[in-house]
Amino acid sequence: ESAGNGKGTSNMDHPPLHVLSLYHRDMNIYGDSGNILSVTRRAELYGFRPMIRYYNPGDPWPDQVDVILGGGGQDHGQERIIQDLQKKGSLLADLADRGTPMLMICGLYQLFGHYFETSDHERLEGIGILDVHTVARSDRMIGNLVEHSPDFGQVVGYENHSGLTYLGEGAQPLGTVDQEGRGNNGKDHTEGARRNKVIGTYMHGSLLPKNPAITDYLIGAAADGRYGEGSLDQMKQAMTEDAGQELARLDSLAEQAS
Ligand code: GLN
Image (tube, rainbow, N blue to C red; front, side, top):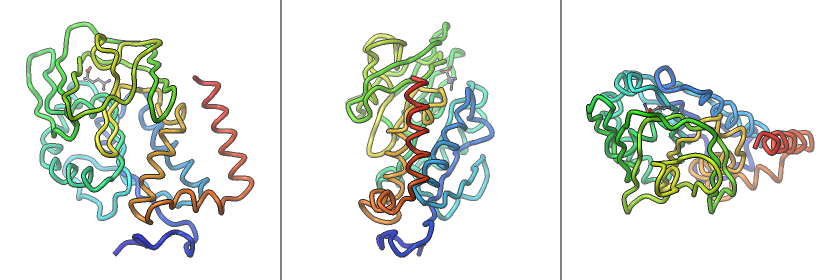
């Protein structure tokens, strides 16, 4: 069994957190890999030892996965990974049901839904973890995106997609586009989708350096899953003053960027 499932972090020096970058090679545009840097940096400052694995089609699935991050990709990137994703669908759905946090941006957000119909009218069947579906249209939605989320407050980023995404009854939006941008479909003011601890969103940016509340949510959920409820709080209490100051500095940089 893993490092200390359910045993808390208190007896452990730098407890590991396993971060998986899903389809890193093909699904990682507009700076989405900055999300990995953000999670690992903040997790380190909290005292964890983040271990990053890069998963690409055909790779063996890692034994230990505490949080999964996936980025955007052009339609051809999506076509390259779709078959592998479909094979991994039930494994990912199982992890989602068990509360593994996941953040899926744009192209992978679409494929975590039921399907994505491309502008060539080709239908890519998604894995249906999020109750959404997406249909491309000819013009792209490009620009800054600012929304309000009940759990995370103001969320800022940048969107660039052709797909119009529609939420089914089983999906909560991540936020409401109330200031700037188009969001899921430019009509209903919703943006992104959530189910369990899975977040799908059109926010590039990178998202996480600019929105530390979401980064901490993912780290907290990852730590809870491996070490039991409240693990991140335990780690925060034991944090050094230097680490606290560095986190405050990152927060103020994020504030300036938004
Ligand atoms: N190909 C998808 C679209 O344009 C996703 C693009 C992206 O990930 N930025 O809708």
